[in-house]
Length: 360
Image (cartoon, rainbow, N blue to C red; front, side, top):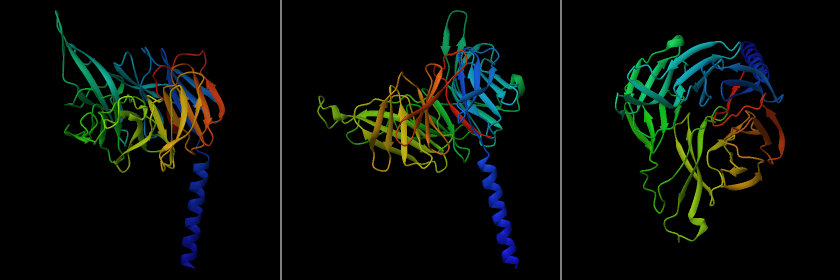
């Protein structure tokens, strides 16, 4: 009887959990120039909230708090991080990079700790003199998210140049993509090359190239970016010598993977992995579907204009492309048929802002 009672209680708990999960809705968060932040009910295909970001000149990176309640937005010409609570649009955090009077500082990527207590920012400072500028060493700047509307750093550490994207693993380790992929200890500032890029020594392959500014790991736990290189063992006039691959970092296992899937490069900026990790999608002027188990491009469709970022729904059924203008286009992950779109009110320019997904 005791075992039967335990089984019944466990079944009730599982039913309750399943019920709560079924009611979790999926929302998309995007920004647009000069000062707008939008919350989109993506299944309903409509914008449900529009917020104005104070002192904004164009939102760029967006980082969500772990509970999905606060959007931290990089704005003010890459010189401020603003935290906006998504229920009423109240500004609850602001960190201005120019916190030293004799410096001008720009941010080129940030992310948040798994517990939501700290923000890690990659900053490029310049010392201002009366007669000249002096470029200073890049640094990792750490802010506390409870720092209020005039947050100041609690730690600073030097970092290498040419980093353009930060991401935090489930363990709390910080990874940074630049000329190489670095793993950084956020408490000591010590770093090491976790995956060589510019300095890789892969046989018969040139140094790779990538332009990765767009996070798309919300629904799959995997960072991915298109990466291109050439086969140095092939003739210069052989078109197959130019290769396109996906570089991936699993933010749970912290394992890297490089998958070469086609020759001629047609996607430049962003990609997204399906939640089951079996396929990937990437877009620019075309949207392509990639088989990761037997690496090749399965299908491609033309887009009506260029898009910068690609993302995916939690159930893996819908693929989203956005950026550049004022629409989010929606496609079926099964056959890349177009399912619809969301137009932002007033048609503001998203530019290089990012798409983030939350569930509430």
